[in-house]
Length: 106
Image (cartoon, rainbow, N blue to C red):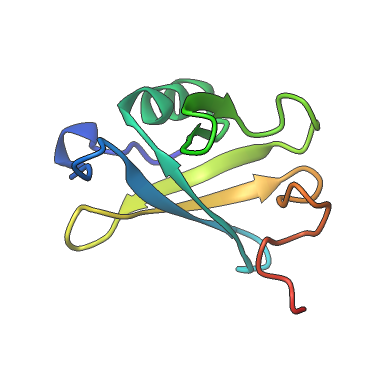
């Protein structure tokens, strides 16, 4: 996994940064989530995506209950340093409702 320069991340006033999660094989956008510094540190340390749940106000490891994990290939900051693109290899569907992507057509 390419290393993310955590000191260059520009967090929001809530100390969060949005993460666009994309399948590294199909290039399909899977989800949009948020991370705080702790989630990013755990992601870098484990190679598995960790996020911060705004609704539950807590850290979560994607797949900890469902088994549908996201293995990280790379993490890249955008040109402003305020959004991250995570290229991942998903194991199972990324969306909590069971679809491959949270952006399935309705």
